[in-house]
Amino acid sequence: MLGAHEEHPQPGSRSHQVTAQAAPSPTAETKLQAPLVRVENLVKHFPAGGGLLGRNVVHAVDGVSLAIQPGETLGLVGESGCGKSTLGRVIVRLLPATSGHVYFRETDLTKMRGEKLRRLRQEIQMIFQDPYASLNPRMTVGDIVSEPLRNFGVARGKKADQKVQEMMRVVGLNPNFVNRYPHEFSGGQRQRIGIARSLVLDPTFIVADEPVSALDVSIQAQIVNLMEDLQAKFNLTFLFIAHDLSVVRHISDRVAVMYLGKIVEIGAADAIRDRPLHPYTKVLQSSVPVPDPDLEAARKPILLKGDIPSPVNPPAACRFHTRCPIAQKICSEVDPPLEQKEDGRFVACHFPGKL
Image (cartoon, rainbow, N blue to C red; front, side, top):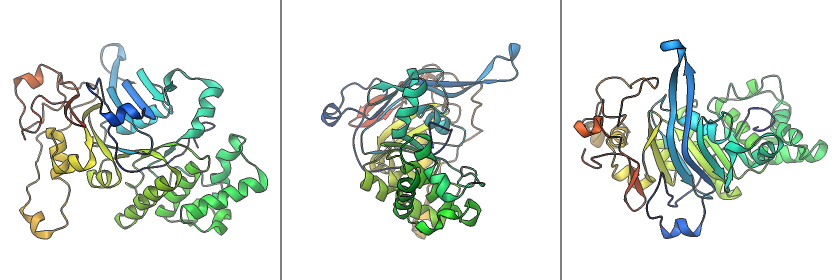
């Protein structure tokens, strides 16, 4: 539950088009409907030891801009350590922003404090990655799911019990299990409990931080399908964070690709899958296994040279140029802005679609 304690959340739906960065000409659809969530030039730096006077900083999120339309799922994908989870936590205000803005229904969350922010968090929840660590082992499932209701003064007693049982049914769990403890459940069931807790306050927007990465592959599809059903049932809006592009493109309407603290490409999920424009997106796409064994045997994944640069000292200009197969001199001298290259596609690259 977010608000009273630093706790829990949920996921997403189908297609819209949204602006990112200083997007030139928004589509007609964007003009008709304002984004539910809008992020503008968001920065999050963490202090790090070492360096002159110990003033090194980790550039976890560096100037991210994006927008999420009501009812859609925006997938956020990238390698571990690229800053995607930090971005999600800054958006829901579990972490303060270093600079920039996060607007929820045109209200700037970065400037809100105290009770006003706490109350607004009833509409903004989060599902965490580890279903083992995100549930209090000393609390029963009933207490875990009802805790947000008590902390926000929404319901108590019999009314709260009824709401908890309703949420248990909604996520596919037996409502008679409310007196059991988290250790009595499997990983997939625990994630369903976390989803139930995030839903109990009837939120509008849910950040799902790698909600299936800690689960067995056989269970991942069940959770993804559950989230899609819940989105349709409750008209939810999701930011779905993952490092697996195959999972993200299945559940998402649009996909944002992140590398070393920056968004490098945003587009419709089908377009990202069929024709990635940024070299890094192309690399991610090439690593997704193909279910056909003949096609998989003939496929040649693109292998990158070297390691991911340190976020303490990221490369100048384009941050991908040190590993990019098509990098040229300009890539190390000029930082490419995230620009609209075609309808609904935003890319930060000097040579989009060349790889």
